[in-house]
Image 1 (cartoon, rainbow, N blue to C red):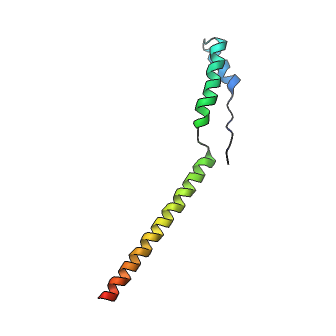
Image 2: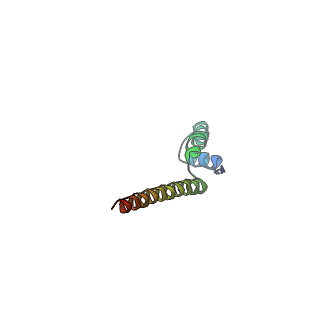
Image 3: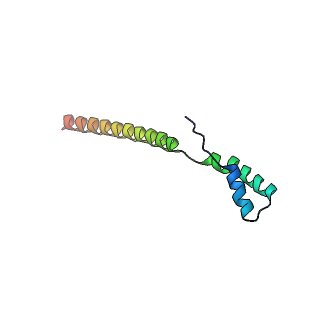
Amino acid sequence: MTMAIAFDTPGYSKRLRAGGIDQQHAEAHAVAARDFIVSELVTKSDLTAAITTQTLALTLRLGVMMTVGFGALATLMKLL
């Protein structure tokens, strides 16, 4: 699920203009910030999905390691 992130482009541009940047540059900078910076941000749902995926992968690895370990132990006990 992709979640849109709100970015106040006019507000950002207004803040730049208040800081002394001319309107054309302020608007271009605001659009660039929205297009290039905001698109790289991670949302809570992105993080939750990544953590869930990693948790499942680690649980599976641990289960496989335990199964192999117990199998090896059982084999050694039969040999002795």
